[in-house]
Image (tube, rainbow, N blue to C red; front, side, top):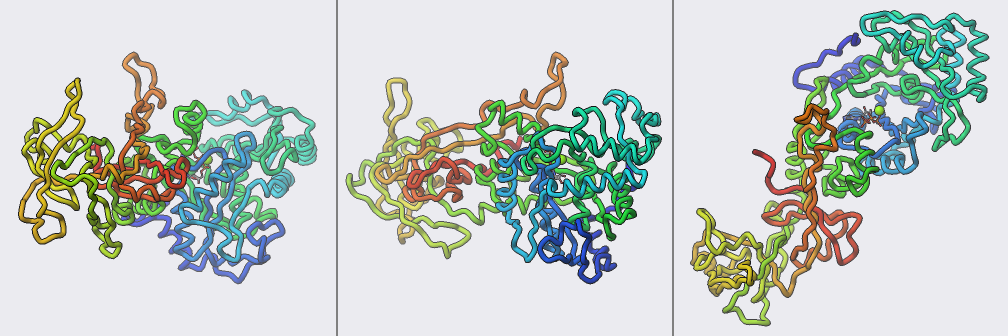
Length: 594
Ligand code: ATP
Ligand code: MG
């Protein structure tokens, strides 16, 4: 049933190869093309340089963008950038009920955040499909006039039954042989609000026996009384996606229309429609060509707007930008970075083979980028007090911590050492397990960037929980001084001065789903699983931490490596000046690897 497959050159991005070939054959090399009256791509200059490739990223504004969209954005905008072409951000807003301005805005934000813009050339490359409703209507009338479309008044059920099946041809509608005049009258009545929603549709007249069901007279216009976020109540008929999309591409002079594999079987209709409209003089050659690639499937998340809407509306998460969601707004708050997404999309590549990508690959990309980009800071996430009994009370001294081990040019910062420090609870064990080289009675450890200390014991509460750890320091062993090596120790722990700490809220995020393929398979009693059944109930832990003082000044969206813990970002939304809260972006190592 599927149409001709495009061959994939081994080891390369097949779309890139196609573009290189097209450019080498001068496929688009004509002088500036003056365009047709309806041509959308010459809105500024009146001419279009068709020698350039044009791609588009065409989201429907019916939800926030997710990580799958990032793949499409890097592909489309990336190709345009690499081949000196143009990529349009086009809102495919032909389906009024589910679309809104909030979604339009969030999508624009996400695309800009990933590093792509518009208005940055002498052309405006921001488009709305709803601006072409007049032209789409004209295209529909043109199809009627050339005998390629008819108004069908069968009920939805009749239409479905008469469409046939994969193995059986469909049956012609009794309305299929109406005259052009009759079709035009009916279609205009549809437009003028004379017919009820769902009472009739305009269909392309192709072939009810086609082996490709998409070619069995697909519907192209329907009656729908719905308010549109852009055109208001101007229209009560709306074009179907499969009709609108090729026309949008053609009007914008798109050369390579890149979409996901599920549209492969739509390609014959895409080509059929544009050819008919070109024959009628409404469009000019070269016409856009559609190419399909495999969508991104990522383990442990859901990448479907429908499911994301459900998670948000049913309040399984705090909103579209919840840091656990795979939306780009959520990923941004989580501390994922555009450079990390770029690395990820480069690494997974573009192919025609459907596959699942392990979530750890995405996390590794974020780690790799943050390892280079993020400065180091000290954070005690589960604090317990350490008292250096032989250190003078009231004294404090400077210790020097490098800001970035890979970038000595970023220098060192000062942290204060005092008699009372915060250390991690897990860095002390009264009865050490085998191989434990941190604090334990009589044991020695280095306070990172400070002194070697020897543990002398601990205090406990009535329940036997350790409340304070005691130690003595060895005065000659300060890091960075000649004597620092005189005492060798195996362990090295981080700390924050009690008198110089910033007590802060930190959110430790984990995966939102427990299963790699949420909702797949069956329950033990045979019921189908739902993706909501696989939600990880422990996907966030909010803790009170002790951080080095400089973190008090962290700006929203600034990322750091908290030494020994992972990468953290100052939350974009909940931080206030002088009181940032931090989100864990990713741990230093993968805790899910079995
Ligand atoms: P969803 O399936 O999540 O509802 P969609 O395909 O309906 O998404 P659109 O707004 O139509 O969302 O998507 C805009 C563009 O992003 C389309 O070209 C689509 O092919 C592409 N896209 C959507 N999801 C993915 C994905 N998982 N991987 C790669 N590209 C995607
Ligand atoms: Mg879609």
